[in-house]
Every structure is written in C-alpha cells, then in structure tokens.
Amino acid sequence: MKKNILSLLLTWGLAGSALFAQQPAATEPKPIDHSYKPMTLKLNDDGSKYIRFITWHQFWMSNTQNNPGTLDINGKAVSSTMDFALRRSRFLVMSQISPRALILMHWGINNQSFVNGGSAGTTGSNGGKKPQVYIHDAWTEYELVKNVLSIGAGLHYWNGISRMTNASTLNFMAVDAPIFNWATIEATDQFARQLGIYAKGQIGRFDYRFALNKPFANGAAPKDVAKNGVAVNVLNEKWAQAGYVKYMFWDKESNKLPFEVGSHLGAKKVLNLGVGFYNHPESSLHKTASDSTFQNQTALGADVYMEYPINKTKGTMLHLYGVYYNYDFGTNYLRNLGILNTHASVAPPGEGRTADSWAGGGNLQPTIGTGSIIYTQLGFKLPQFKNGTSFMPYATFTYKNFERLADPSTQMGLGLNYFVTGHNAKITLEYQTRPVYKLQEGGTAIQRNGSKGQLIIQTAIFL
Image (cartoon, rainbow, N blue to C red; front, side, top):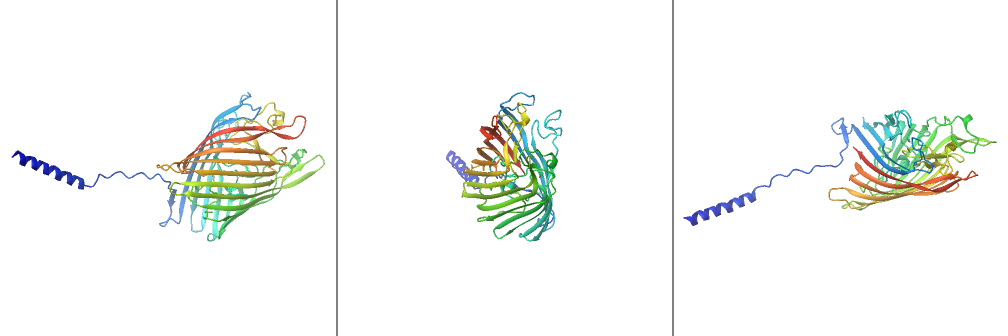
C-alpha cells in the first residue's frame, strides 16, 4: 500500500512538472523605447500636412583663464572665473501647410550668465536676469519645382560662405561653433540671420542656396569714424548677396531646412565639397588723415565634410571637416569677441586695452577680421555600449592670419562627447585655447603674447 501511494505521488509530481514545463512563461514587460520620436501634429490622414515642434537647452559650466589685467565686477584683478550659463534656450515651430507651402518660426535666448543677457545690461540690479526672448527665424517658403527650386522670404538662415555658416546648433560635433564661421554675427545680422529672400534646391548631386538680403543698419555714422587707418562697420542701405553650393559624392543630405548637420553619428555616409560667398557693398569705412574710402565686406569660403561609418553594428564612425575662409571687410578691420564673457574690463583702462591684453578682459580674442582662417575638426565615435550610449573624442585646430595683427595665431580644442541618446541627450567636455595679444610698447604693432585656456562642460537636450 505504501509503495502504491509513493508511486502515485511520484507520478503526479512528474506529470505536474511536465505540465508546468509546457506552460508559457510569464509575459515579461516590453523594454521601453527611448529612441527619439519627433513631436509632430498631423493635420491630415497621411501626415503630408503637419506641425512640428522642436525645443532645446544647452547649459554650460566653465572655468576660464582670464586675459591679463582682467577685473571682476567689483574692479578687482581676477585671474580665472568659474561660471554657469545658458548658452542657448530655444523653441522652433514649422508647418507644412500644403504640399508646397511651409512656414517656420524660431525664437529663444542666448548667452545668459549671472551678468550677461539681462534687460538692464551687463551689471546692475538685474544683471543677467530676465533676458529678452527674440525671434531668430521667421520665414515662409513655396516650392516651385519639386526638390529643384523653392523660394522663400523673411528673417532667414539660408546663408552663404560655408557649411558651418549654416550650421545647426542642435548637433555640433564639437561643443560649439568657432563663431568666426558667422562672419557678420551681431554686426549686420540678428544672430546670423538677415532679412531677405532666398532660393534653394537640389539638382542631381548639387545642393545650392542663394539669398538677397537687406542687412541690419548697425554701425557708426560715417562722420564719426576715427581717422586711424582701421575700417569699421558704418550705417548702410546697400543690399547683400550670399550663396553656398555643395556637391554630394556619397549619400545625399536633406535641405528641407537650412540647418546643416554637424555630425550624423554614422547614420549617413557623407562626402561633400562646398564653396560659398557673402558680399555687402560699401558697408565698411576706412579713414586716414588724408583719405576716406568706403569698402565692401566680402567673405569667401571653401570646405570639405566627411563622415564615414566604419562599423554600423558597433556604431563606430570617422568625422572630418575642414574649411578655409578669406575675409575682406576693409583695411585692418578686426573684431574681438568672447562667448559668455563675464569680465570684459581690464586695468588700467587705456582706451579699453592694456599692454598685456589688447583684446580686453575675460576670454575676448581677435575673432573676425580681414585676413584668412583655416579651421579643422577630427572626431572618432567609439563602439557603443549595450545600452546604446557611446563616446566620441575629438580635436579642433584653428589658424588665423589677420591683416591688423603682427603675428598669426594657432589654437586648438580637445573634447569628448558622451551620447546618452545621440544628439538628443548628450554631455560634452572640451578644453580650448585662445591667443592673447599685446600692444608693442612704444609702438603700434599688435603682437602675440602667449595663450590662455578655457574648460567647458555642456549638457544638451533637444526634443
């Protein structure tokens, strides 16, 4: 009897085990899809009419070696500065309201730090608080010949000169643009935009954009220009012309929008050669004790862009970009610029210059001027991890040779991108150098006087 009961229990146990083994496993939760999905509102069933929304923030933490003689907001000498800042905070809306008609509007702020960007100037009771939100782009476009010819008008970003003059701020390969790629930045444009009309399209493997603009009236009155042999921007009502043409050897890139991609991160195999120009007649004035001459502002550019996916499974990719600029903005024309510069003051005043730092305080440096510039980028995207994240180390190199300066300059940047979700969520670390110039003692020559550095950490998200 006991043997029968034991046999029965054993049989039930084996049968139960077999039955349990045949049951389907408990349903595991599906992994969450974290890939980017554009924020799009469809206006018809097939989605050919739509409204798309894009928003992004770029936040900087930086440590800057200041130029010699720099003063802080209390007038005390300061050799270095740590800062937090909003490099960009933007919102863009575009709508394809019919198969041929498009409307776009883009607004936001730039460069808000604890002293910069506020409604009350650089210092004071408001400091950097409550910066003014302003329009970056506002244009409408109509497609005359599908893919071949579209025309548009408004405050637009269909620029000439180079690929990087048309760069998207969403997907830089490096931490940012070198700024001199926007030759008229905040002089006769509104943050790289001008009012005008444009034509763009693609013919075979050629991609083109041409524009006729009315630059903003910004500069000195001709009668107020100093007779010092240095050309400066003057008030002007002349029209400007701009254009950029590239030839795409491998994969074609979209020109739906003017914003050229900084890095495709291996999604495309791209090799492009491009040339471009910008010309604004008689927009500079050069005066000496005996002569007064209006001079054109002309910028020429030629560039090469390559992105080569090495192993798509692993996500490895090689990036290369090189550009040559030749700027002629008038005799000895030169602008000193510094991104998110919080300490432009120097001591002693000396007409805003010192023997140690001719450009001024903080991170100011000679940036745009009559002369030539060579700029290169080299990056390599490392194999991605199982969770889809990846690293991309990179380097940049710049050579500037401006007519007004006695010595040319070289500078470099070394950086590392950490892509959490591609360009949609990334962290970038970059160390960059810049030249320092001084006025020759007892003379007029502006000579190289070493270099300083800046460390930047950027967090960037766009949706």
